[in-house]
Length: 352
Ligand code: CP3
Image (cartoon, rainbow, N blue to C red):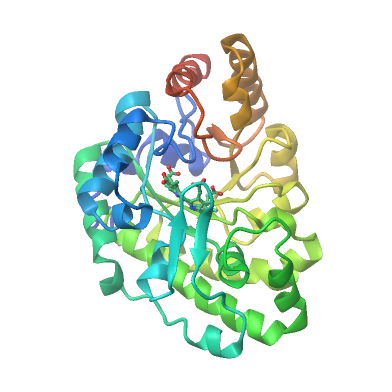
């Protein structure tokens, strides 16, 4: 599919983000923030007042406004679609809600073969509101690329099996090891859903995608290799023909970094625990890196933030491509002016 057919402005295709992701030279390091649209912004809280998270995600006008807010305010080099990893699950009929301060919560957890069989495939018609929001956004964004995203099969499975957020992912691991056939069936279904969700976003004009396997760091390298990596590989291989860069991210994945890259990413997202130069050595020369300022440090005084941003940039220079980001999402208590200053500093300090 050509960029023209997708109606993406050519400058979005040739943006700093896309170039850095493909390990091509850039005049300065591109920067965006996971969870850049959200509760750190007063304009977000104003627009969201009285509207539930999943209701907001289903309204293309609100999705467009909320996605654009951090681009306007901070001058970041990419927008990320305002949505959630559980939106495609809701769209195929899983009874769930997103509880403020908690996260996704299911009415009935998925535990049996019958529960798994009830999860049907996602078709484009289920998410017309996503197609519409992405098209509206691409029209507004001009040369700024839009990042589409999906939750990876393991992270989605954890919410489904646990019935909500979990610290230890105990029931998830119990199914993985106790009933590998059922596990594989569930992850296959989730991979197809994630893949369909990404393809709709790219067809509508997204210039890059990020696969969030946020909780993969809970796994041993052996479990990741056997039970998880192959299903994430299905998702990433399934969008390869679209030609957009694929970013693959998880938290606490220091011991998995080589595998996170090897299952089929152009860019590996790294949390704050491993410095980017070391992370890049673990990942290898064929992939760019994204990260990795600790989001907690944005609560420190500016001299600390200034020093740490410069350190991340210096460590990122050793990688074959670097997209500046946080090591995980923006914390709601973050002063948004701090984010704007970080963008300015990344832009000036990385200029070559
Ligand atoms: O700015 C962006 O990054 C784009 C939007 C985005 C949201 N969720 C919006 C959101 C993205 C990419 C996600 C992905 C997501 N959702 C992940 C993977 C990223 C990560 O953080 O690791 C996960 C694990 C989820 C599940 C989820 N949804 C959680 C843990 C929460 C937070 C619960 C809370 O209130 O603390 C949500 C809700 C959610 N998703 C919010 C936002 C802005 C907060 C809801 C609100 O503002 O009322």
